Structure formats: structure tokens, C-alpha cells
Length: 132
Image (cartoon, rainbow, N blue to C red; front, top):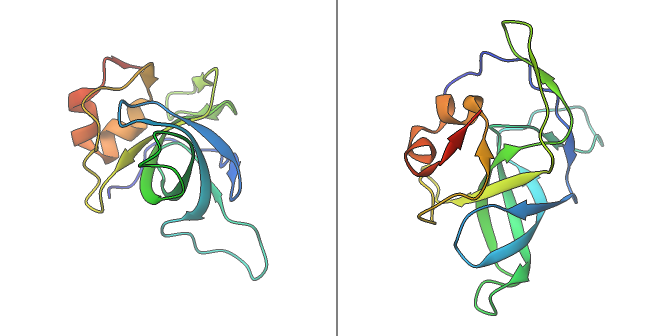
């Protein structure tokens, strides 16, 4: 994973419910861990746009429910600041299911994807329809 140019405000705690924005069959995901998080003792880990997280499928296909996957967060409601001074905020919190290398499991993504995600995971940019 590459470093991000923007100062991402971490807005999603462990335990947060987010929308699955791809066509894998999962609908609602719950964050259970943040990959690469290094924080203080007893502090709840947080994640933001472009972070890889461990999720459990709460709603979706019967085969996918109650299973643990890796996911990358592609949208968050909380605004964050880019290096050029613009502030970006989306309508919902959303993620895409990926494998361990960061390649998406689905073949299409519904809705916009943040540019910071494409910088870090270029394979997600190949299936994204809108990049903001």
C-alpha cells in the first residue's frame, strides 16, 4: 500500500456498519478490525477512506452471511481535506470486498470512488465507474 497525499479524517470505528458497494452479493458489512492500525492501549481503532479493514457480512446472500472478508473503504460521510485545500464528503459510508492483495472480488462498483483509494489500490480503479 502506498502512502496517501490527503489528510484523511478517520471516521469509522470498529463496530460500524457500512454499505457494500460492489456486486459480490453482500449488502451490509460490519468493521471488526483495521489493518495496520497502531494506536494507544484500549483505544478503539478507526478507519477512513483508503484503509483496508476486516469485515463480517451482516446482510446479503446466504452463502456470504456470517463470513469474514477483507474490504477497502471507498466512501465516508465525514469530510476530509485534500492537499489542494478542497474538502470531500460523500452521502454514505461504503466499502468494496477485496482479497489479501487488494484486488476486488466483484466486477463493478456502484456509486463514486474517492481518488485516494485509486492511488493506493489501482485495481479498484479499473472497475470503478465514477472517480471523485
